[in-house]
Length: 78
Image 1 (tube, rainbow, N blue to C red):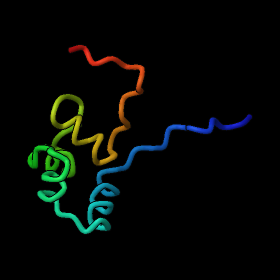
Image 2 (image 1 turned 180 degrees about the vertical axis):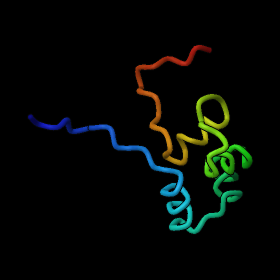
Image 3 (image 1 turned 30 degrees about the vertical axis):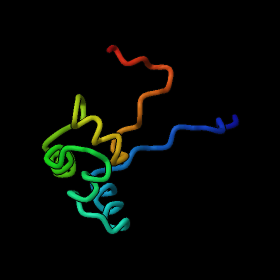
């Protein structure tokens, strides 16, 4: 069986996300300023206090690579 060219890559763990920020040489507040994310939402995700299911925490989880972005065919219910 062959694999698809654009196979979904696995999401990061919280520890991998922390390590990724460290390798980038960025603090959490700096990452939040650059991405427009809520600092507390990012800290909550990295510590495990938030799951990243809805709203600010979901956007932060996607930006950190903790969750995969929604497929392009999913419409925003606005």
